[in-house]
Length: 89
Image (cartoon, rainbow, N blue to C red; front, side, top):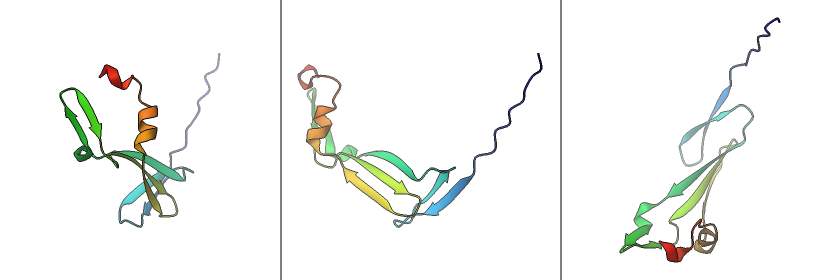
């Protein structure tokens, strides 16, 4: 059997300076980069009890046009996505 070589073209990166001054590289045709931000100063674990303050978890979305958005996750949504019953901690 004849071997067939497949060449992958090198991924091109576009560097964008965002409105907050950071520089982000976007690979290929990607238009948005998403990142989860955790503010450990708003998370307290004491005597086996986890306490989260508002703004403890947020997502940052950086767009290819240079805009950036940070959205704090509401605690009610965070509690609904918790993998274990809160009483088992």
